[in-house]
Length: 115
Image 1 (cartoon, helix red, strand yellow):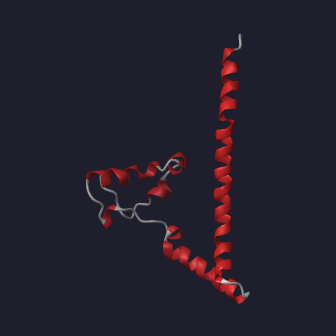
Image 2 (cartoon, rainbow, N blue to C red; image 1 turned 120 degrees about the vertical axis):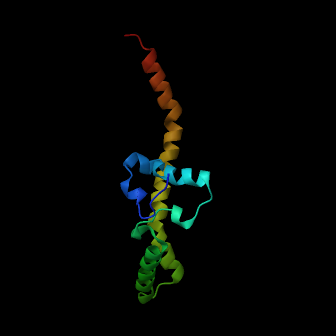
Image 3 (cartoon, rainbow, N blue to C red; image 1 turned 45 degrees about the horizontal axis):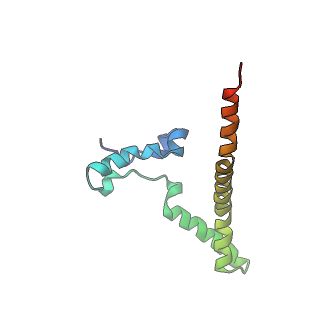
């Protein structure tokens, strides 16, 4: 099973495949059979490449330097939204883990009730 390097696996993947990284199965299957070569990997979208991220950060850094802000402040202001999104997702996950026994007890009691 060969992957066309120009094939954009992430772009063609549905929501469930993206959430659970199922689109990577093709790549992992190849990596299991033989060592990876550059031509075995698929091409990233332009917005996901490090060049694009670097260029966007450089533009942000130049704007911050014109406002006489420090490099650390520019770096902090660039990554804070990403960190907050990660924090909120992690908090939501932890709250679900905390509520899991209570929700399970409610579900078991609902199943036990007579009809």
